Image (cartoon, rainbow, N blue to C red; front, side, top):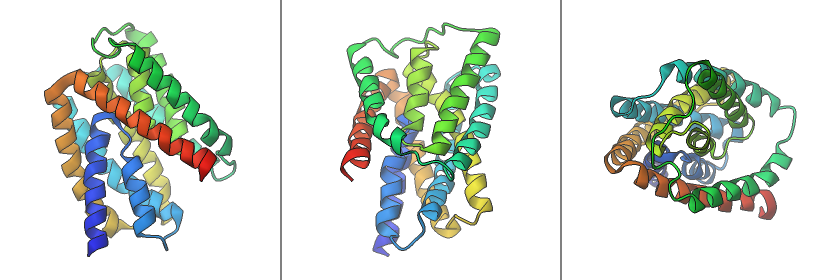
Length: 253
């Protein structure tokens, strides 16, 4: 019973964080691995994806009620994220991501420094592209980060947000809304693979999904209410947490 409550609490907090800036896996995946140690890793990851897709979908719906996004860009980008995430998941069964694991902390440090130094970064919503150019660049971002999500994964939502702020000129709130749409596509792709191969604990995942939806509703409501300044602070917090986690995994574990 205690383990069930701990998994539910972890899922709620994961949904809360993930709804604002991504990074819910920082909370949920370690909780699954520590509380269900006898379960195959692939099954724990599949269960995480099953719970995650519900939370992310609800957060996306909540954002889209308040935040306008360009569907002409977002839908092709989501399709590329879906396809490339599946390709990444397939490739990781044949090639080890060990070198990427060691490089990731340095990439995240660069993201954190850039965001911290640029005080106006993500504060204003001034899209710099339109039409076909925005669609093609969106597909490139969706494909690249989608592949990364399937192949390795940590910080996918945060990378989506950073790129949409840095290169598209979105504010953090709009970037978060678009990131949620693409995250749903990534999760759906990975879940299709895990579900087909029998690597999902459906009952456990259902409980965690229920709790994560509650966290996602709370987190997305707070992001919309408090605006881009709040989201920026949460983004930096999650990126710093990711730096610590990936440094440990890549060099100390």
